Image 1 (cartoon, rainbow, N blue to C red):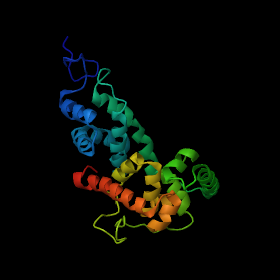
Image 2 (image 1 turned 90 degrees about the horizontal axis):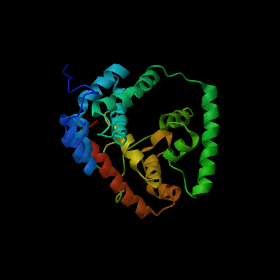
Image 3 (image 1 turned 180 degrees about the vertical axis):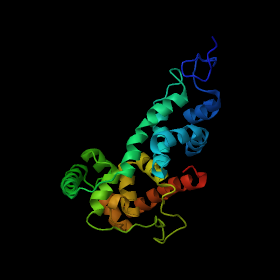
Image 4 (image 1 turned 30 degrees about the horizontal axis):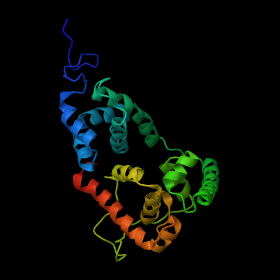
Length: 253
């Protein structure tokens, strides 16, 4: 009996005992050695057929699910061990969570009572975290503390009314530069960048873009809430903008 080498239980033909498929080896090894936006982009492009399969099978091809699939795949790479199995098998296993994402995107039910309870929890959490940190907490910190998702935070806040959003302002002049507020095409990249920022940088991005229902504030007000100087806001905004621009340049999302 001849075992198909593409099957997950087939023996590895790699000299080092790795079960990583040959078509992924170069981009995976490069990303593992140097995890940069460029190597992440190359890796995502190479595993696109796997993401397409998962999106179609688990999420009915929804654009929301597709963006989430890329984020989940990037996180799944951190737990992948080439010695234990194939990359495709690992990814498809980790991406089964897309079923929940797809179900939520198709069945969103508004429950006013729960929103009111969540709003009270949000207010209490913001107050306690502010006292403990000596600055405004980032939405990432609030989400971790309350166990709400960032999307839930936005829903709870916006239930009181719409909040304007805008572009990242120029750190020096305060005018609008050539950068654009991440739209539906690259919301997933914005979320990925946000998760990699420090809590203070998350606070800056929260109030600069009006994320998750936060108000849009001028730099001097953001500085007060973040507990740093206005000049530091300018420097950090420049780095954040550069990270957001990487997603646009690479056209990963």
